[in-house]
Length: 178
Ligand SMILES: CC(C)(COP(=O)(O)OP(=O)(O)OC[C@H]1O[C@@H](n2cnc3c(N)ncnc32)[C@H](O)[C@@H]1OP(=O)(O)O)[C@@H](O)C(=O)NCCC(=O)NCCS
Image 1 (cartoon, rainbow, N blue to C red):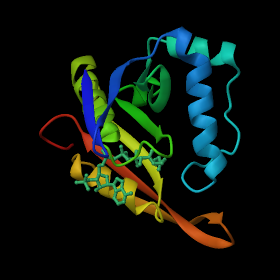
Image 2 (cartoon, rainbow, N blue to C red):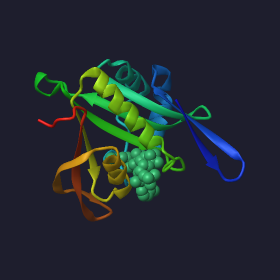
Image 3 (cartoon, protein in one colour):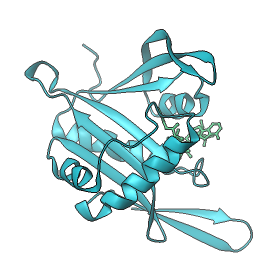
Image 4 (cartoon, rainbow, N blue to C red):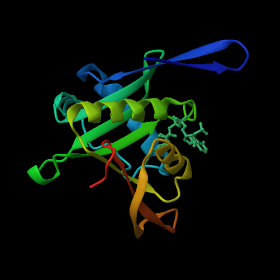
């Protein structure tokens, strides 16, 4: 799948959206770490997997990792992690990070739409995510893609000395909610 953006007068950047392979592990780690280094959007400050651990995660059939590649560099990562237990196997947790300089070009939208399609195919009923209440761009993106706020955990985080709520958002892949 290709996404094109007019950049300035002449050049056209090309972004490929595809499923990750284990060869992408290093690029995924670099992309995630660069977003973590901004310290504004993601809870972790250090990416939790080594290259080997990341490769194993990518190969796990219960998980799905999608990437956006631009000129051979991974600039966007979306992960879905399926519930581990019988009681929550119908759900996944979604995480997404687009590198600075590549945002607001439609990449996040395409990655999430692809994830929604894949969840429907796999019989996943509910896509959950958590987002800082300060991350208005992300909340707006999720809302446009059909996610709804289910609740929030007040003052769950402290970012730059200020309390920030943890907003819980959900997308149901079936027309009817339970
Ligand atoms: C949040 C994020 C995933 C959205 O992906 P994206 O590719 O930047 O977003 P898109 O270009 O698909 O835009 C979709 C909508 O998001 C919102 N949005 C995206 N960037 C925005 C910005 N800088 N300011 C305001 N709204 C913005 C808009 O509503 C936009 O719709 P529009 O194009 O009609 O204005 C991406 O910006 C990102 O990874 N940010 C940093 C990390 C992060 O916040 N991860 C999520 C943690 S929960």
